[in-house]
Image 1 (cartoon, rainbow, N blue to C red):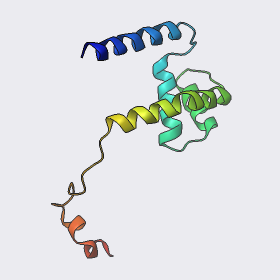
Image 2 (tube, rainbow, N blue to C red):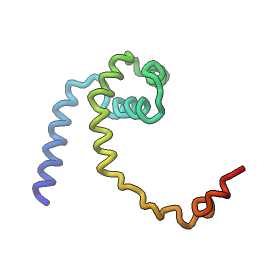
Image 3 (cartoon, rainbow, N blue to C red):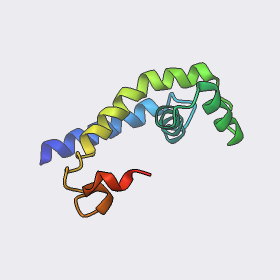
Image 4 (cartoon, rainbow, N blue to C red):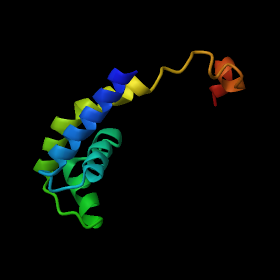
Length: 103
């Protein structure tokens, strides 16, 4: 347990040191990357959304963020989100009877 705490503290320390060189808050970078990946927006759409919120960022910068932080974000999501069990919707009538979905 102590080893895991050390690794978490070490990662946080590295993140704080690296954040000194960022010109944009990490929360905004994460938000931009999430918008691009989750909602299938174009880079220019994300650029517009950030501009509406007062942050002037070029679309190429957003692309660099996606290339840099996208794989890490995906890895974190995959490790924290467990797969839903197949019986999760067994009690829902439309899931048991596929005929009920026909119109």
